[in-house]
Image (cartoon, rainbow over all chains, first blue to last red; front, side, top):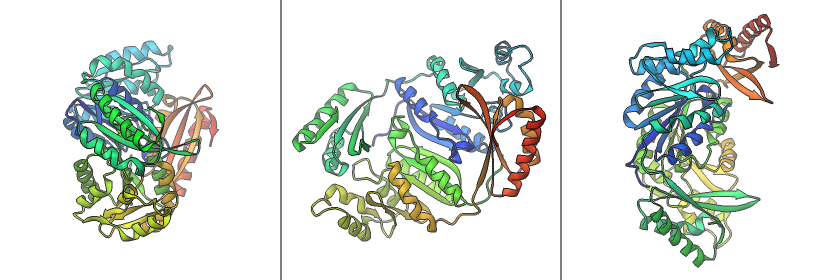
Length: 249
Length: 249
């Protein structure tokens, strides 16, 4: 497989509820698909516990090894929401009331509803840049290349659009899927030859079960549509020769 | 939050399809719930790409820092299935035909169907211990504390039962959930006090939306049912005082 030399990111999921298996993470897929569309490739995902030292150490490592780090979770009002404090410590910045965030939430809530619990959500690293939240008011933030988003999937999703201009990506990462009515072992050798002929493309093979039938999806990924097209042709050639049924091409 | 001093594990998801966002990982939750039931706590999850050096380096790090490592993905017949080769290199073991695995698959397939592609699945690190696969034949394996499972969720699920006796866990990790018709900010202060009184329990707070209504689930986790019960009582006390509606207790 190829190593990415372009713009990359790591997703850091902060949350005991994912590690315990109670909650199924869906934010990785949301963030990754969005990043691909703006030319950023996700090199790694980590899920870590709500432990301050773990968050600090992991953020301080990843912000040096990745162009961008996206964290999810831990920016709500309860005692287990320690992302903003941990990021402050990671960057050795004051953890303090963010005036702009305070104004946003003061305006968002009805008079008397902006209570102590909610006020916790405006405590951030000094001079953090806000990430606006069109769903539930409380903003996320970024410090340098570390972007902190909430864990609730619908809220996170609604905040990505506002980030577009702050992420400098490369060419969008394109992909094409060919789905076949076959098994992997049938195409393994021919597909390996195609990969050999197209070393700078990422070619993946994924078995699936659909309506009780086995199948294989071949996924080709690259920034270069021309190269993808050439690869599709080579795959369709050996599929024709083997008389394999194509489900989606 | 508390640091786990008991038996722990890291889950290592190997697969470009998760990093690209194309596929939603569900194996983390399956493995984590099963591990909890046998007294093993998941400390971290990593998702990495199908890159040999990345797999080798990550496995060699994690097998020292975790009691157990569970990998998923990359043990099928195609060119992008490089987990067994990478694990061999990580442990500096020969990558060779595993005689017992060969016999299993020879018996599993009809005459003539155990072709070159399928034979790739019996190449493993020398003296690997097999993990039987009741669904589709091809076994997983472990070397020392590193357990290699397939990526297809239904197959992975069917293989965990057979592993039970090879994992030495601690006490099962128990959890209790109380679901409330409230918002997090309403209970944040009282819940923080309960956490302060019960420092060795893991207490998480998770907002939810259900049938158009907001709610909060409080999740208490510990190996000690007595401590969980004491904590439940303290939580129900402040909930009664605040006259918050309980959905599930």
